[in-house]
Length: 250
Ligand SMILES: Nc1ncnc2c1ncn2[C@@H]1O[C@H](COP(=O)(O)OP(=O)(O)OP(=O)(O)O)[C@@H](O)[C@H]1O
Ligand SMILES: [Mg+2]
Image (cartoon, rainbow, N blue to C red; front, side, top):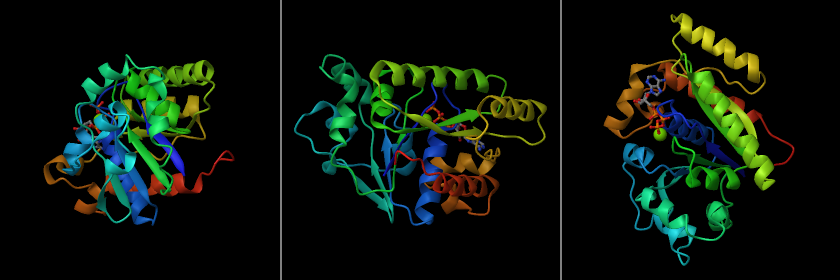
């Protein structure tokens, strides 16, 4: 089972869009996916209109809550753990011993998936540490704009710190350039810069596409709205690359 945190400390770079659409692309390719919304903004939860009696809040805060109580089936091959009140959960967690590894401990019974994808908040917080200390892989969506590379360097630094402070090996296995505009010089320069520093794990870029804005409105992934759209094709291509990338430690 591949345990993946989708992380960038910068906001609005396409983390949630990428997490949701990759999950759908992987599910179409017969992979079983657990989608986890770890963002207090709950954008993934709102986008997919999912709800459950128990949420990430209960899982993180109540010792007696079992992860199976928080999982809802969304469609074939896709289950979701929704987010609710995670700001409050983070405050409560801050006072607990072992606060950085609560998610890891609570997810121990989770094994029945090919991929666990965690949509992380755009902040350097306890919630992100919990995701990174559970995950063995990180996907970093990076916007192909002027400041994208700066955001990328910050995440890489954070991951290095986690690796050395907690002795927890977590691998950057995919950097996903987002909102790529073929006609824009800045987009092209930004993509070149990303490739220069991180060649080997840089995925095919996701092109800018107005259909992405319809996701939240329709409560669907772009693969359901229009599988032939530019962004849908890009996410399907990335899913192929991800499936074909297997690391020795899995
Ligand atoms: N390929 C794309 N084409 C056009 N718009 C896009 C694309 N990808 C993402 N967007 C838009 O960019 C905005 C930010 O995307 P998203 O919410 O996925 O980012 P995020 O990194 O999860 O943000 P946050 O840090 O707030 O959680 C959204 O309005 C989304 O619709
Ligand atoms: Mg988001």
